[in-house]
Structure formats: structure tokens, C-alpha cells
Image (cartoon, rainbow, N blue to C red; front, side, top):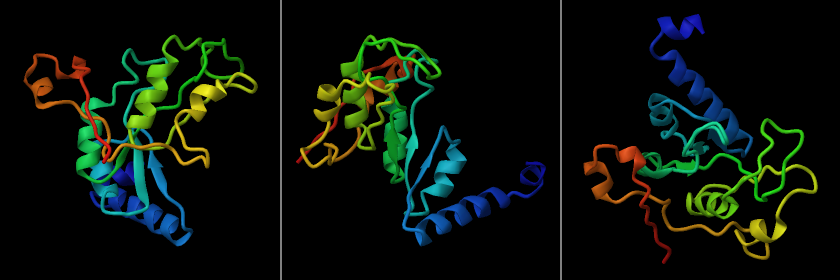
Length: 172
């Protein structure tokens, strides 16, 4: 890590190497809670397809609110991933948090409308299959909008744009 503080181009070279390795292996990359400079560097590589756009599940007040982050990610060609979530209202065992999820419909709706993958993380036997299967076609293809949810311009004129939870998207 010390070398990254002394060499301005080293981080970009590392991300480039990771992207080239993924491309050679026919894999894609998801960044987890990246800094803007990492996203900008990653946006130059087709193998970087998505990045987490929310805070930690259960540890952030509005961890489902992808809003302005989604707008930025989409502008640079990266899909905003909504962190994993519990699809049911059952207590969960064996994970970092016990739950229960009080708004599972909101969680899956935001995940689907992010345009990225959908990540239910329920424990064994606790997944709400009806809710999760409503997010995809019969062949498992996740339903997606043409672009991720994003806030309207009016949100950015408010004193606290991060608390504006109006979103829109479309599907042709």
C-alpha cells in the first residue's frame, strides 16, 4: 500500500492488470464501494461491468437508496449494484446480521431497477422464492430497465439531495 502513496499511476496500472486478466479469462469485475477515481479508471475497461452503489446492508440508514450514485455510475458505463439483501421477513442465522428485513419488496425492487445483478443473501431455507423469482423470467434472466433508477433534477436543488428518494427509469 505504501507504494500506492508514492506512485500516482500504480493504482491505475493495478486496476488495468486486473481488468485485462478478467477479460482474458472471459470474466467480469464488480467493484465494491469504490472511490470515484477507481470507478473512472475502471470505466475504461469493458470487463468492469458493475460496482456497489450502496452502503452496507443493515449498517446504513438508507442502504437501498442508489439515486445519485446510480446516475454517476450510468454516466461512465458502469451498472450500480444494490448490496445483497434478505428476501424474506424471517430471522436469518449464520450471517453478519440477523434481520428480519422489514421491507423486502423495496429491497428487491431497487435491486432489479438498478440494472445490475440481484443479490438475495438469505440463509439456507429462508429465501422467499416467490419474491426472488418475480425478479426474473422463467429462464432466470433478470428483468432490467433500459437504464438504472436515477433521481430527477429537482433532487439536486434541495438542501439535502441525498435525502431525495424520487426515482425514475424506463423500459422500451
